[in-house]
Length: 287
Ligand code: NDP
Image (cartoon, rainbow, N blue to C red; front, top):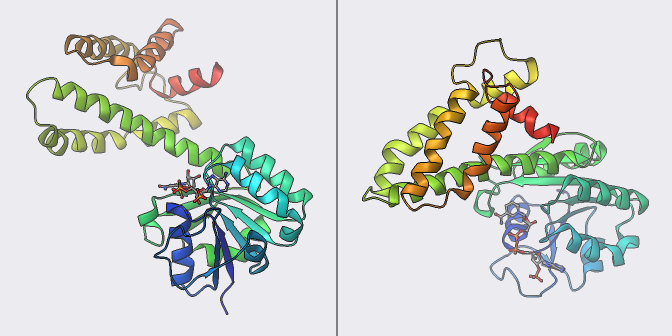
């Protein structure tokens, strides 16, 4: 028989996780604070209480809104959790993950923290992956079950490392969304078709720029060749002023852009004008 799994939380994501476990043949027990959530979910056992839900499986997957709600939900039933493995896929910070891991250790619970890099529709599909950190024993034991959700990637026994990398990926995504939001506001200030601009220009441009990202990481890790910067920061700082001025001129709030302009200016003032973007990473970390 496949590993029985309990899923706590039947929001959009929890329901998708439960659906994937059930579809893969895992006996799946579910519990949600508000009864009746995810009415379309079939082939699962709906537990009458959270205690019944936990008693049903050695593997308990938690997906609630915040880690505060996870702690408040699990604390009263800690004795029932002892000896089981808890995989917490709720979004949170590295510090929260480490606190949860310490709490779990005190209760005799094997703890894995996870960061889901997918939206609910992607769960069980090829593009989804989930970062895990915490107990290597729990990961080793339950990797085959967790693999039905998404490609499982163990990133270390420090429970905070999955959240750290999850949030870092999200900052990359939001940085891109911020740029896209601003770009569309700028072209929309004139009679430029947003869809044509996006299809013909923005997406190809961003795709080409993605190719430069790994070089920034390499420069950061191994050091850049002196004078190798093809687009040095002094040039970028000078041109960046045009983005701000053009936005104001077109009646578009430059607020999403100004912090990047300020960072470029600071880099030049501190003598990094002939370097490339890796210098900005160091500058951010020094503050
Ligand atoms: P939803 O808002 O759809 O569901 C929230 C869930 O949390 C519900 O089960 C809700 O129960 C429960 N909950 C909220 N407050 C409490 C509480 N005080 N006590 C007990 N249960 C509570 O969110 P999602 O399912 O979309 O997200 C769940 C987690 O997954 C979040 O941490 C989110 O960041 C993460 N995630 C979500 C993604 C997405 O695209 N949806 C992508 C990647 C990660 P109730 O029904 O009783 O309100």
